[in-house]
Length: 252
Image (cartoon, rainbow, N blue to C red; front, side, top):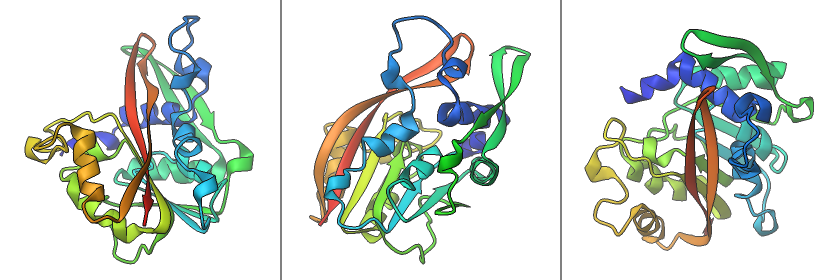
C-alpha cells in the first residue's frame, strides 16, 4: 500500500524536520528564496486557519492527519482538549514522545550515505496534557469520537483512497457553529487515490469538487480561502516546494 511509506524512517525524519526543525536545519542557505512564509507550516495551519473571533466554543479540537503532531500542540493553545489522529503508527509514536519528553532524535540527510544525527524539540511551554494522540484511519474513524468545535485536516484529502468518505463524515464531527479547516496541494496520485475519485473528476477543478461536496447539504458555508506555501527538506540540495490551498468552513 502507498500509505506504508509513512512508516519509513526516511519519511519520519522528513516530517520531524518539517514540523519541528529550526530554519537552519531546514534551509541553511542565504538566498532570497524561500522567504519566511514557507516555514512553520503546521503552526500556520492553526494560526491562519482557526478564526478565534468566530468560535462559539473552545472545548474540543480534532487534528486529523496530524502526522508528528506540531499542529495539535498549537491547537492546544486555543482549545481545552485536542485529539490528534494519524494513519501512521510511527508518526503517532513520535508525536507522543514529543508530548511526554519534549525531544526526539532525527537523522538529517546531507547526501547519499551521509546524515547528521541531531535532535528536534518542542518548546516546554507547549508540552500539554490537553493533547492526546492515537492511530486511526481517516476513512474509518471510530464511531464514538463525538463532536468538535474545530476539525483540522491539513494535506490529507489527496492522500485518501476515497476522499468523499471523509467529506461526508465532517458534518458528524463538526458541531454547529464549529469550524472545519482544510489545506491541500491537490497532489493527486493514483497510487493513493483512483483517478475517478479525485475531487477534480466531474468538476471544474479540485476546489470546485470540494465545494460541491461540502455545500451539497447546506451544512457548511465557505468562510475563507487562501494559499499557503510550504517547504519539505529531502536532503541538503533537494527540497519540495508546494502551495497548499487552505479553506475555512463554518458548520451551520
